Length: 221
Image (cartoon, rainbow, N blue to C red; front, side, top):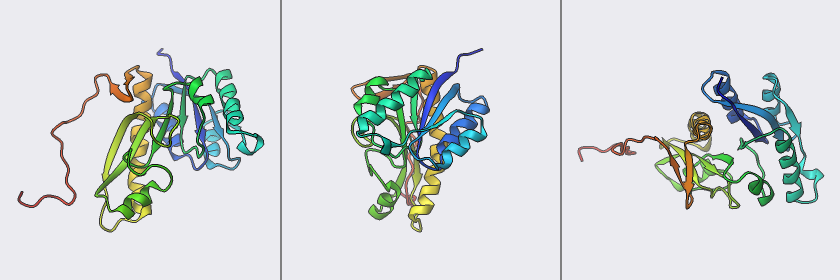
């Protein structure tokens, strides 16, 4: 039997990306095992999702620690005790410190609902609609000390329609988040990821270099 990669998941909210990861694991598409789900928010629905699948959960309230570093040190302690090898942020609404990053170099992943480096930070979908871009999407990246600034692993692109609101665009992007996050983790599981000067390479990764999409569609050109 192939070894499953032990992962730890950090959550703060509803946990739809956590649910997608769980579903891919249970369907045999993702070779990982969730060792523990940690939330800084006691009533985060993500915890209920984890419990429904009999996964270990733990609440670590950031308010109980004097510094961000002390909070992250407790997360590291828990993850190390559970033999976690990859940290997955799934809607974790905290900026992490070098305490966690140094413990898991290039082993902390996050997903952001925009095509980084555009529209970093909060309310990325609203930023995209307000700016008037024709395409948006989502990005899985390794976490560094900046805000949504780490090396990019995989991205998905969706069109922004004239009638879109923040809510409708968010829903379209979320569908792709649920596809690319498990894929990024599986790339890691298979040892296919390397990082050189912040550029991520996926061994045997394929892309149609001739694929071009226009929004609005071209008319006779």
